[in-house]
Every structure is written in C-alpha cells, then in structure tokens.
Image (cartoon, rainbow, N blue to C red):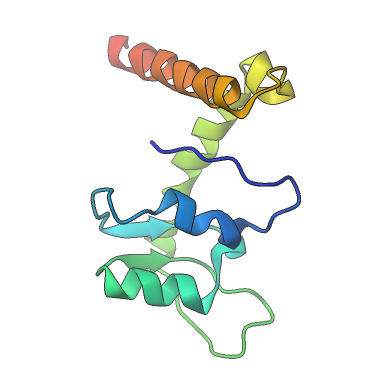
Length: 119
C-alpha cells in the first residue's frame, strides 16, 4: 500500500502520479472511480500494460467500455478505506504534521492486516 497527501481541494487524477510511481511493481489492472477518468491516466496505464478499469465520466466524448465484473472488486478498496476511517485519528486528522498522519495510517493499516491474518 502506498499513501500520499495532496491539497484538500485537489482533484483525484492530479495525485495519481504520486501513487503510481514507476518504482512500484506493475499491477495487472487499475480499479478506480470516475475521478480518475483522464486520457493521460489511460495512456500511462497502456504504456505499462495495465488494464484500466475506470468508468467514464458522463462528459466524455469518446466512449470507453469497462469490465463491470472486475470493477465490482473496487468494493474491497472502499471497505478498506471505511475500516481505516474507523480509527478516530485518521477520520479526524488530529496530527498536525503530514509525517505523523501518514505514519498513523500505516500503523492502522498494519493493525487491520494483522487482524485479517488472525481470522
């Protein structure tokens, strides 16, 4: 898992390059919501041989299909965010510095992963 912080009012696709750096293992598919529907993201994923599973925005002129069966797996990601937000410091962002906030996200993620392993 990789986490980055962007400005509060920044659009989703502007933070895409921070998270999908070239030094990470190449995924086989990118599951994302409509906020990531940009031609630059689709071209970047095509260059890396990654299947973009992103529903198109309503304003898109060029129609692009999406594998709905694969897109349903995005529910797992949304549930993970929901579980992360159950930790009060993550939901309310008590920490003043970016480093301590990201560290608490990492700690909470590890705690969730260990709980998943023990079940």
